[in-house]
Amino acid sequence: MNPFFFGTSAEPLFGLFYPPKAATARGAAVLLCCPVGQEYMRSHRAFRQMALLLSRAGFPVMRFDYFGTGDSAGDSHQMSLDRCRVDVEAAVEELRDMTGVTPVVLVGLRMGANIAALAAPRLTGVAHVVLWDPLTDGMQHLVDILNENPTLSGTIRTADDALRVEGTVGTLGFPLTPRLRKEIGALDLRSTPPAASEYFVVSSSHEEEARRFFDVFRAQVPQAAFASIPTEGNWNEVDEYGSALIPQAAIRRIVERLSESVA
Image (cartoon, one colour):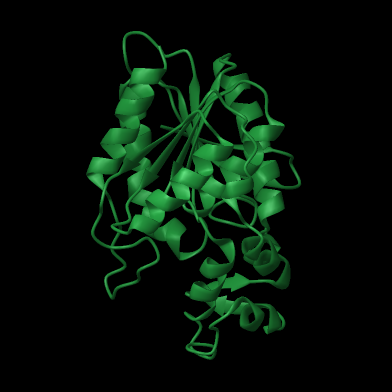
């Protein structure tokens, strides 16, 4: 694992590169697109484990922090989904420069999956996109996380309630600016334009809603496959120990799928 900074000197982004450990390197590099907010903290160890397993399978792998998050430059209130998309594009360019490998795989978790889906159509050479527990309804997610704010809890029941909230509000220790709330509310994977040769949607949900979403998604993106791998716990949970969520079965299935698909 090699830590480094990339991007511009004024707004450097923090990255971690995992060189391929197998005897023969794969023909595609993998970029991991993390969630944001509390889900970033909860998924940190899961992404680290996935990066290690992909590296052992022969993939060059990179994970990184968006502008305004983690160890990258910028304050948290400066983060926006549009900027995250731009950061994915910069990270892909950096990964290609480091490895000399043009085909790239995007693996995104939760909002990171939506960010990967937004970035993919703007990139060339995207071989595979993995959408792991993506936000299938941006507005419902916005309602849910606004209700995590103690002042707003129980008062945000509809999209109209969410849109009436003024100013920047905090939820689980992270700021939701008006711009970010608008972007989250507008997320809709059902309008995703096909941008890769393969899509793999992984759901940890026990609910049939995930399957119904996928049926709609596949009508738009015929080259998509689906796997339901139920997991106890949820990505946005906070407990008194600050524990991580590491769904081993889902991680292994994603690594297996990419190993089967990329020579």
